[in-house]
Amino acid sequence: QVRVVESGGGLVQAGGSLRLSCVASGSTFRINAMGWYLQAPGKPREWVASITRGGITNYADSVKGRFTISRNNAKDTVYLQMNTLEVEDTAVYYCTADVDGVAGLYRTWGQGTQVTVSS
Image (cartoon, rainbow, N blue to C red; front, side, top):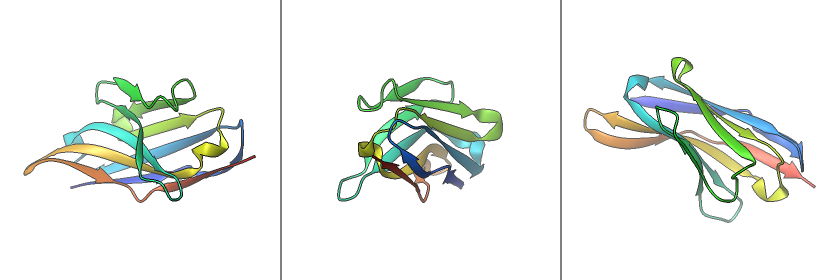
């Protein structure tokens, strides 16, 4: 089993920056891609960014040029550097890990970390 735990959320003013971290534990050698999702109040969860084990990244259009996802495989950690934050970025941010498990592929989710951007 793989578990992921996020940290780094908080309150920041618009235009500011935050860096989220997500540490994986368990059978981390089975992790393929990792990613971030967000869920704003009253809205469905949406994908933000993802990164493969080899470092290939993809971003939602809404965050391109502002957010950077990175990964340290030796530390089983993925990061989300968020710059030029906007009030609309306020949400709970969730980390995911896509795992090649014994019984097949599955995605594990963290509990989320709150990011609040004030005007």
